[in-house]
Image (cartoon, rainbow, N blue to C red; front, side, top):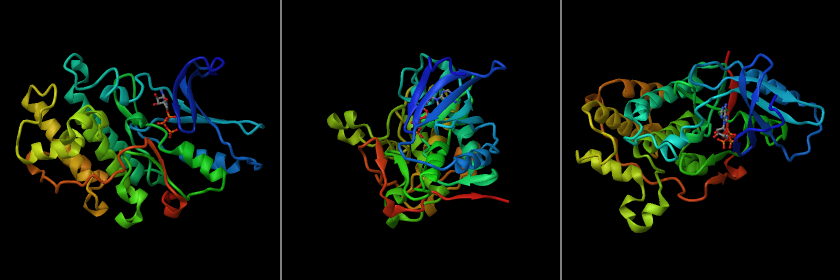
Length: 325
Ligand SMILES: Nc1ncnc2c1ncn2[C@@H]1O[C@H](COP(=O)(O)OP(=O)(O)OP(=O)(O)O)[C@@H](O)[C@H]1O
């Protein structure tokens, strides 16, 4: 199926992703899962988990087409192939989105993507058969189809399958620094819930707006005031200053940018209760900018450095999975 693993699409924390083709010609992405844990069981848990999650179906969620599980305990997840790769490269990678040199990927597209991702997340929070709280939403989890529509990829399924199998079960959570809500790494901030995903979503939207990492260590060395993008943009929007963003040449683009900024700032409020639900986010993005109130200035509450943060098991039971009737 993968033609001997010739084309590697990427590398995730749980395995490599390869391009493949089904016998009917459909292109797929095959995500191999490596487990360094001795597992003697038959993989029933894995199969059940995949079966239950494969019932998830939404236009803004990458479709899980199947799985592989062989006698030697090798396992893989098979997803629909997303030809335009991940959002990451359009935010700060080789195809930076706000660049005027690529008008096809300007503010209109970014704004549309913010709405599509919000729809996918809202579905995962409220509408689907399997509800998983606390995904690891970040720009490389958002994949783009051939028409540049956004789909949330994998949404922690790999982690979930391996953790269930290894009996680590639902204890301990991993997240990517820069997107993890404060309550995920410290319970004193509140309870981990779908609002933790709202936080990650907000951080990501602000990166889409800024075209850079929210915490830019390189910039920070020379210009400390520019270290934390959410603070910089907060001051500009609050004081009604020029946003100082690339490519805002029409009023329509400015309105789209403003909505994304205000929504992003609401989403990253430290108190989970102050953050909007994903349905509220959609309402805010789709409504008029005049109806939006500017939130209080968000604190810098994520740990700024290490790219992958493993959370100790003292913050256990943070991923909650349930099958809704
Ligand atoms: N369905 C797909 N179609 C095309 N490319 C994909 C697909 N799934 C993943 N990729 C590519 O592989 C990369 C790694 O994906 P993966 O989900 O494993 O990584 P990750 O975001 O680091 O996740 P995790 O740490 O949860 O394993 C993606 O950033 C993307 O470029």
